[in-house]
Amino acid sequence: MRCWSCGRCRAPRPRCGWSSGTGTWWARMTSWVEFPPQTLQQKPPNGWFRLLPFPGTEEDSGGSLGALRLKVRLTEDRVLPSQHYQPLMALLLESVRGPVEEDTASPLAVLEEVASGDCRRDLATTLVKLFLGQGLAGPLLDYLTRREVARTRDPNTLFRSNSLASKSMQQFMKLVGMRYLHEVLKPVVSRVFEERKYVELDPCKMDLSRARRISFKGAPSEDQVRESSLGLLTGYLGPIVDAIVGSVARCPPAMRRAFKQLRLCVEERFPQAEHQDVKYLAISGFLFLRFFAPAILTPKLFDLRDQHADPQTSRSLLLLAKAVQSIGNLGQQLGQGKELWMAPLHPFLLQSISRVRAFLDELVDVDGEEEAGGPARALVPPSVTLREGYLLKRKEEPAGLATRFAFKKRYFRLSGEDLSYAKSPECQVRSSIPVSHIRAVERVDEGAFQLPHVMQVVTQDGAGALHTTYLQCKNVNELNQWLSALRKASAPNQDKLAACHPGAFRGGRWTCCLQAERPAVGCSRTHSAVTLGDWSDPLDPDAETQMVYRQLLLGRDQLRMKFLEDSHLDTGLEADTGRGPSATHGTCPEFLTGQRAAAAHLLEVLADLDRAHEEFQRQGQVAPGPPGP
Image (tube, rainbow, N blue to C red; front, top):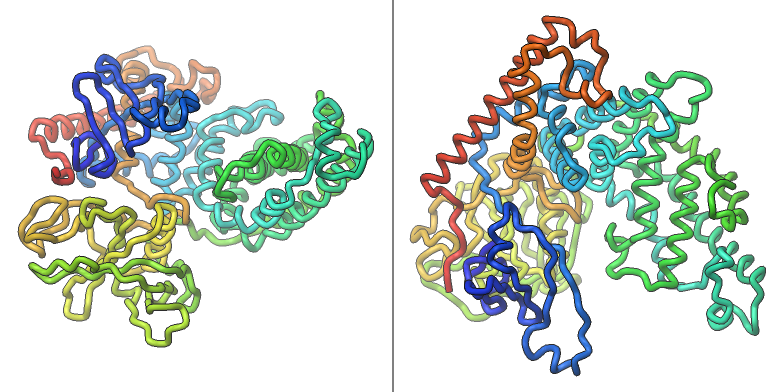
């Protein structure tokens, strides 16, 4: 965590400070946190800390500021050059191609055993991104779900736990399906926020005085509030269900193929007639209970709204989310439990279930093996406008030239063919940058121009010369969206740059690495892989493989003991948990030999990475940080 002032945090230069004596770090001149030195010596630092107002802030506000405690965990890691991760990457990719029943010593099997609940979500996100970049997200999900289904005896508990398979499918939907989610839910969610109607079905929570102020003339009764609320809820639920069941064509093909494989796996495991609904529940459990319903409940977390809902709107969203969950459960729990006050909605919910079954049947009716991620391909048709809006533009400066007002406001329009710009949207005279000429699209350090939210577009002309255009966005959200859009549009381009400078060439040197030659090779890796969405960072396979390596280290001793040190080994890594394959495999000498060989190979790869990290630490080969003030 570094900045240009203190060298320890990422805050801009004039907005941070550091006291080495007390371990105090404050940022943005409004608040500060004190880290005791002994806490920072933990591996990794982890604890609760009070967020304090910056001196003078509390007095200025009349002493009315509240108290806030933060859960802080600091992690630091070193990412090696790509070639060091290739053996581990090969093992990970090989894991999904092997038979699930006999896999207990592969990296994925070990990860599944050692991943704790706290890190399982992050690990699932890392694995999904890693395999998306290789075009193998589908096989990864199929591998994990087959392992989960194979050890599930009661179909009613299928995917109900927070297993690695459940978390991976959940993160996969978020990564590839956010645009789809917005198209389906945003119109109705926006309506709920704008109308702010009083909705309540639970008589224990009804506030008749509030209902009178908002929805009625005079003093309403509980029946009147219930009848009004029922009408409002069905008025919202109707469009939601219509949008969902009519969204098959808009659902990303990668999601549809993943659901198809999931359904086939469940049908093979539970073919009995009494389990005919399991194939529907397996898919709806993810799509409705882990995707649509959470997005309705907390729209801000899914970028459906900029702010959290007020208490009244939040209650309406909660009731809608409960209804969508009931539909996703195919009405199996209607009339049961403690929420009998939801009964007025039951007729509507039951009418929707048959439509949902038909929707799920149509959703998995998909052919083809094309995978999300993988080799770059055209993601945007040439005629489609991907993004447009005002940005501040600056060209790279000739040597020795530094103008004071170099950024000019221009209206940009990005299509699959070019990035054009003019003084205004109506201006007929426009300049353009062909998308096919783009070689890199990267963020720029704030210290390069002393400005935030700047990105660079590096292009190559016909003569092979590189040119850089700097663009400043108004906020970080806009920056991320432009980065994603430009990377999508230029995804098929060849000859992408492997590295570039996150700074600018000013004063005869690069601000990022202090090299004194403009053509000097870039000091920072580029993110040339396909992006996942407007709200997601690009794929970074080296950093993601590094996290997998760190997680595998937690299971190294267990792996060595189970497969290499125990001469009487007769079961796999999972046998002790009661979830592994049958003992038939464990008593087969050929099977045990293969298991030991796989375990030994994985341990050898981990040892090689250990040595590489030790060597880099001895040589002090770390990525250069931004210059000091």
